[in-house]
Image (cartoon, each protein chain N blue to C red):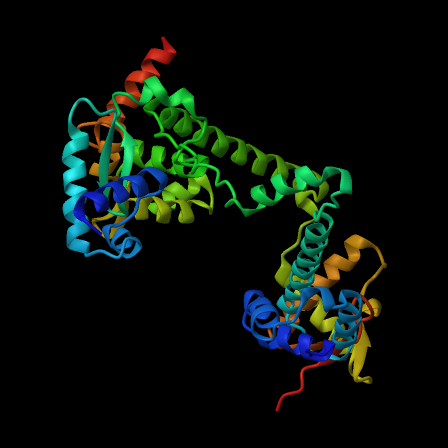
Length: 170
Length: 230
């Protein structure tokens, strides 16, 4: 496939796919070289970063995904009721982000046994990760988490939560 | 054409229902219309009665395959019904229909189900909800514990170890002259509470290897025997 046409095809695939898709998968789909696909993806990423676009191309550990830029998300969110994170996933993510670092067992105490499955899926999506904490392992939010919510750092979430809680209590 | 028995063997031996359908339709070239599902179901029931050990995936697979075959038959039926009879008077329309039939079918445009990012407010709501649910779960557990304490007042609760030892002594005395004793004879009064009070320590004794239990039919009498040491 010619490079220009490949670029258009990849853009169409990214548009259609709700979940992140890897360069390898795209290469298989369009019978191209992975290196060519990565070149195209980098080009698309640069193009979408321009201010005139309302979406950008995010690279996560799970693959590439077209997403609405965080600054526009509040403006367009009512156009669809469907969130890309389910209720259970969201609760675990919120808990890890607020309480980080937090052990898996502490998460399970709050959420229940389904937390194991949710933690695994959030790790696959790259939104949380496991780090060593003295003799045990703890969960923390990642840079991808910060990018997802348009934050500078994953730790900024605690400040946001505390401020919002204070505002609600006033 | 495969016989009913051969079809059933296929359903049992193939690794998945998809492999069975592929074998029936693509490899053996059997027309789903020619498979009598009622006869097949009867043959399967016969098979179930003869089989000694049953993997529950097999009947589940049979039900799914039968449903798929039925669906294939109904699709054939509706295709036949859709062949419209055009009366003589409508021969002009006949030509139009022929032209329309030769056109490739219209493909609906690809539609994407848009998913949006979760917002920070939603994340905060999720955190609050997680704690609310945890609180409700803790309260529910406390309520249940209180209800159990009311139903079984603490004063009446004795150590399970004591009950196990008491039951073992009772069984040993009873088995001095006989080889086995019925569980019903170990229960003081045949009421729900008394049955549970006797059954729990009995199961512990069996688990610990101190006695043998035998029940020939489900929900029927349980026979208690001394453990035979080899």
